[in-house]
Structure formats: structure tokens, C-alpha cells
Amino acid sequence: MSNRTVAGAPAQPDSASPNAEPVGPRHDRQRFSKASLPLLGPAAVLLIVLFLAPIAYSLYLGFTNLKLTGPTARHHSFTGMENIHRLLSDGVFHQSIWLTAVFVIGSGVVLTTGFALAVAVAMQRAPAAVSGTVGIIVMIAYMIPPVTIAILWVAAGTPGGAITMLVGQTDSDLLHTYPMLLVSAANAWSLTGLAMLQFSAALRNIPEDIVEAAQLENAGAIQRFVRITLPLLKPTIVTTVLLVSLMSLANFAIVFLMTGGGPGTSTMILPVYSYQQGFFFNDLAYGALIGNITVVITTIFSALFVRFSRRNG
Amino acid sequence: MSTATINPSTTSVAEGPDARSEVKAKRFGSETVISTVILIAIGIFFLAPLLWLFFASVDANASARLQWPEFTLKNFTEAASADNMRALLNSAYISVVATLVATIPATMAAYTFSRHHIPWKGPMLLFILMLSGVPVSIMIIPLYEQFLTLNLLSLIPAAIFLGVTSLPFEIWMIKNFIDSVPSELEEAARLEGANTMHVLLRVITPVALPGIAAAAIFGFINAWGNFLVPLVLIPATDQAPAPVALYGFFGGQMVRFGPIAAYSLIYSVPILILYLAMSRLFRGGFSLGGAIRG
Image 1 (tube, chains in turn red, blue):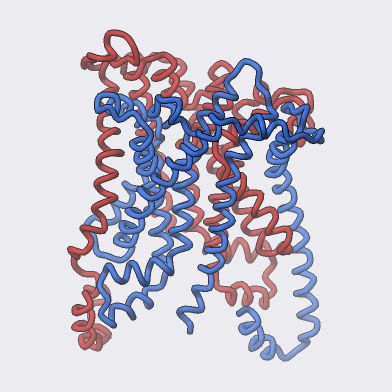
Image 2 (cartoon, helix red, strand yellow; image 1 turned 90 degrees about the vertical axis):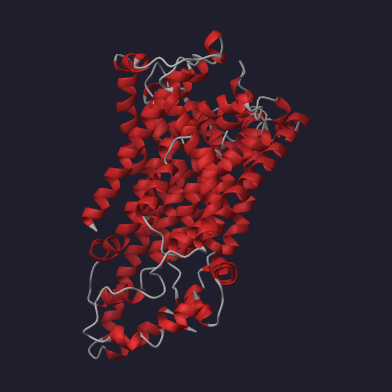
């Protein structure tokens, strides 16, 4: 590597000449280096054995009659499209897809990103004491574990709880009146810190002289935000929106613990439904199939976001 | 840094520097007020549920209500039973193993993705990103089935698996951080004859430590907080970690919020201490600009 760089050094005047190819090969990056293999190896092996193999196995299990208990727990067999037919006529499943979309977009994209962006931008101007305190509170909300979050929010949503008091509905049980809103708020509450970290880091990387130049040109706060901060933050916003919505689906334990999908099936997002079928109704195969659908939907979400970000970028 | 850039520009402003700075000061004032109001409003929303946790944990009449506590420590003594403390130790064990399993391979892979030429790098990174969004539930069912047949339903295999679930996201976090590290430092080391391993350990790792630490925090929290994986993959109750113990509290017929709040606090505080320790690392990391300019 180092030899190549040294050897490349005398050649630099050539490539710097105006006649040279503008996208000529870079001497420091052109080839696949054997040094990459041992560096990628451990991550690759772990991901293949404990991540991809289970997913592949799950894809297969979705087409079997595997149960948690009973005769087909030990000796399951391939049942072809049977589970698919059941899925297509399953009303709870149809509702579950809609609820999943509401949860991911409402909680992950709108609430989490909105809170995080507001906090990160406001922190730049507010007094250090306020920024520091709010920053720590938001980070604590991100740090504390899902089980604690679920307990906090169950308590907060019951009559007399913290959130019912804040919204002035002291007598109502929010977990029964607005279950989806409450689990979405709890999820956003827990993920804002992560998004805030990304935005704060990106805001710190915006060169101060650009902002100061705009200030000297009498650009207002909103103008500066829309014309300077937002465009410079766009790559970070896109990746953060993507990561936070994916994490909302991965973070389903909060919903599982708060409502178990209920009341009725009103918060039965796909990962919760998959778990419920697999381990409450003992139908591991059907649970695996619903999990597989979740992965397909996750992949579509990811692909859409990536395409969207490329088109704009 | 900011004063250094302001000085030349203010001297170049010939007409009415006083008026200008006055306008600027006013604008700064209103921006500060609006920012402060927004922050306090959001802060209250984030603080209120936390406040309940602190109050209920020391409240003799604890309930789901947010109320001023009638002070007692009985909730904590009740929460600190031998079984619950063992559950905390199990959590620590699981989380340390998972963090190491995730962060070391992730750092190596992230550096390689950031700096080396790898065929199909873009698609591979997108694939890894998509993996980070795969809900763990889909792997619980096949893993339960496989671990059952291989007789692996216990603490360490579950911990290693929890580490692997953090791996894709950690690769992304660390790669994004290394991407933002200017390559001048590295090129200087290479000109002095440093090899890849040396560059990674001596140049990249120290400079990227805030990013690696952030990824490690993520990995630790992920393992510490996950309760579905240990619930299914660790059947032995004496190996069960804290969240499973907490779930047991919560699942009972009579929910007693005092001990639950106390145990939640005991369970959550190690994470907060870790965060405080890591935030010092962060502060060191942001002096990075000086390393290049100097």
C-alpha cells in the first residue's frame, strides 16, 4: 500500500495536467486489497451464521407446519402454499399491515425526526444550561431500556399519569382511547435521542463562516434554516429518517409490552402479530411467515427511501 | 474559532458597525427566546414520564399516578432481592459479550468499507443497512428451533446473537464517522510507511473513538434492553436477565408500581452511568478540527 502511494507520487503532475482524464484511476484506491479480507472476515462470518442463515431458515419455515408444541413440533413437514392461503384471508393480517405503516411513518418519520430536528437546531441558540438539560433528558429517554419505557408509558397513559396530565385528560385511559397514538409517542420518545445525536453532529460540521456570512447579509433565522441549514443537513435527514423508521420496526418490544397488540387488535403491528402467532398461539410456522412479510416490507421501505434520497441528491 | 472569523469581517464593514451589531444582537435575542421555549416544551414532554419513575420509586403509596411521593426506601429493598440482583449480573454478562462481539468486527469492517476499494461496495452497504432494519422477531423463531436441536438454549449463545443483531447498524454508525475523518491524517501515516493494521489501530481508532464509542453504546443498550431474545433463547430462570425479571414483576395479577419503579431505576442506572462516561469521550472527539489545522 505505502509503496504504491510513494510510487504514485511522481506521477501526480501528469494526472494534474488539464489533458488528464477527470475521473482517472486513483493510485491509492484502485484495486481490491488483500488486507480488506481479514478486516471484513469476522463481521461477514457472524452475519452469515447468525443473521442470514436464520432468515433463510425462517423463509423455509414459513412454508411448513411447525408448531411450538404437539406432534408437529418435532417432525414438521413442508405444506406448500397452505400458510399463504391462510394469510391472504386473515383479516387481522390486513389490518396489521395498515397499522404497521401508520406506526412507522407517524412515529418514526414524523414524530421522532420532527422532535430531534427541533431539539438539535434549538440547542444551537438556546442558553447552554437549557440545551444541556434538555439534551440530557432526551438522551436518558433514548438510553433507558424498552421494558422500562413500556412501564413508564403504561403508567403515563393511565388516568392521573404523567401524559394524561400533560394533555389535560386526567380521567381518560389513553391506552384504551388512543392506543396507537400512545405507543407511537412512546416509540418516538425513545428514539429521538438517537436522531438528535445524528443531527447535532451534522450541525456541528456546518462551517460557521457560512452561517455568519448569511447573518451579515441580514438573512433571517427562518431563511438561514431553509436556505443553509436544511440543504446541508439533507443527507443526514435522509439517513436518519431511514434508520429511525427501520428501528421503529425493530423496537417493537415497546408495543408488545405496552399493549400486546391490543386493545383487541388496535396496535397489532406486524412484528407483534408474528410473535403472538409463534409463541402465544404456538404456531411457529405461521409466525415465521408473518415475520418474513415484515422483512419484505422493511426491504421495500428501505429501497423507497434510498431511491428517494438518490433522486434528490 | 468563531471570533477569529468574525474579526476580519467586522473590520471590513465600514458604515455603521454599531447599528449592525445592534440589529444582530436583537435578532440573536429573539432566536434565543424562541429556541428556549421550544426546548423547554419538548423537555417537559420528555421529562414527565421520567419524573413518575423517580417519584414512584420512593413513594410508599406508589401508583401509576404522577404524584408527590411519601418518602420511603422500602421499594428499593424489596426490589433488591437476591434473584433480582442475579438477573442484573446476567444482564451485565450478556451485554459485555454482545458489545465485544459487535463492536470489534464492526470497526474493522467499517474502516474497510470507508477506505478500501471493495467490489460492489454500494450494494453491500445498502444490504447491511437493510439488515439493521430486520426485526429480531423473525430470527427468534428459526433460532429457537436451531438452538433447541443444537442444545444451545443458554446465556452465551443468546449474548453472541444479541451482538450480531447490533452488528449491521454499528458498521453503519462507525463507517459514517470514519467517512467524516479527513484522510490527510491517514495519508501522512502511510507516507511514513504504516501498514493497514497500524493505520487502523494507531490513526483511525483514536480519532474515530467517539464514533466507535457511540456504536458500542448502541450495542450495549441493545443487548441490555432486549428482553424477547433472552425470554425465548434462555429458558433457565437462573440465567434470565433483568428485563425478563422485570416482565415477571409486571405480568403479575396485582401490579405493584413502587418496587417496579425502583427495580426499573436500578436496571436503568448502569446505562446512564455508561453514557456519562462516554460523553467525556465525545467532548474529546470534537477537538478533531484542531488536529488537521495544526
